[in-house]
Length: 300
Length: 48
Image 1: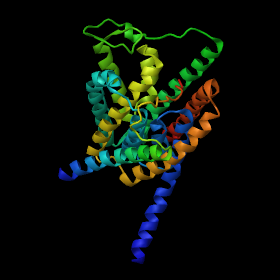
Image 2 (image 1 turned 30 degrees about the vertical axis):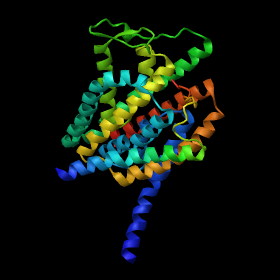
Image 3 (image 1 turned 120 degrees about the horizontal axis):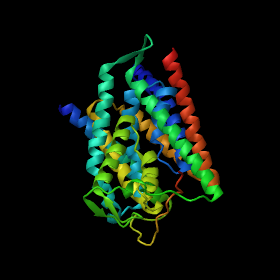
């Protein structure tokens, strides 16, 4: 009985840091109005020293909770499912391919760089996170500056690609869009999400608005459905490979819910451009921290 | 194989139940039901 209690206490103490990490990520997500899946994996791996493949799988599974809450709270209707269902095939192939590449890297074990043996999964995931957060952070910073200066917005670059067949999508600025382009877009979002264990919102929103020229309100509504589909598929793919730690998922869900509530209250005090600039700085700081860890990994 | 299928189902069901529960609790807390049709959804500011 005493041994059981001691074991229970020990497990609780192991999960306590995850609870606080979840609360921290939830706070930032609530404050900036983003999913936060892109923060969970680096935090689990770098701060809590969780194995990278487990951090990716656990992050992908955890995102399904907030994605379900958002979908129910915002009550996305049938009109918002046309685009997500059109790209669902691309998302499916992308998510499973991303999870498969992660599994291949896991099987490879280590790679040798300059005579040093480095964990292949850790190196690959950290390097991609670093490049992704750095480029999106720079873009978000540039966008906040452009908006301040009142410069023109460049929208819908890839929506202009004319590759048949086409579909009618009233939610886009240009209403006739190539289905091939949309499928490729879904494939890319799915692949990155499956590989990095995030819901994909970080690349989905800039992609829908700036590359495909979707109206912001419609992009938010469609992304809720797409993020849910990606999280669902990602959870299946990573669970199948045994890369999910369920007690850790529970700790992150509890901490994340509390943190998001407090963060959304804090976010109300920082509306508009100020918030956008802080968001871009948060991305750049996270990229810098990952960059330092990457250097340590390469030089250790 | 069966263990894999059950584990995958558990991974799918747990976060979804959590999401539904949190949504239900917030509805309860805000004193409204999820079926009110005149409630316009409020979207968060888009950051990028």
